[in-house]
Image 1 (cartoon, helix red, strand yellow):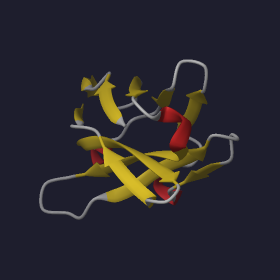
Image 2 (spheres, rainbow, N blue to C red):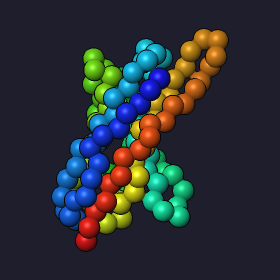
Image 3 (cartoon, rainbow, N blue to C red):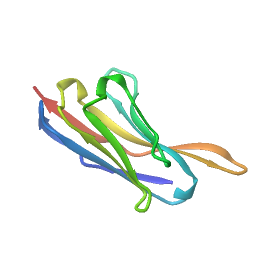
Image 4 (cartoon, rainbow, N blue to C red):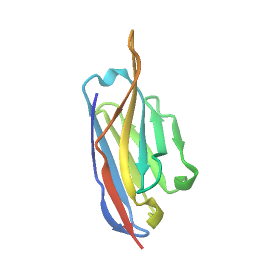
Amino acid sequence: VQLVESGGGLVQAGGSLRLSCAASGTTYSINVMGWYRQAPGLQRELVADITTGGRTNYADSVKGRFAISIDNADNTMYLQMNSLEAEDTAMYYCLAETWRFPEGRADYWGQGTQVTVSS
């Protein structure tokens, strides 16, 4: 599975951005896709994830502000980010969790897209 993120950039606090993650390759094996972020000096953390069935999970820090969605027909995942805060500044990474027999689970990461929120 190959993942390509896009949509990052510089935005003022209170603004919005929409991230996209396009998957290609053996996309039939994807069970869950997610967005993670990593700020300088901090560990990578989960932002939100979504199953191919549409079940979502969010970090407490983004609940009510971010919305994750998936278009299974286009194999693309989105993250709509509203009411952005300076604390949201980070590199955002796309993750695909796959499972195939007999290999089992395998995780794939995108190259990341930078989000910078100016206060």
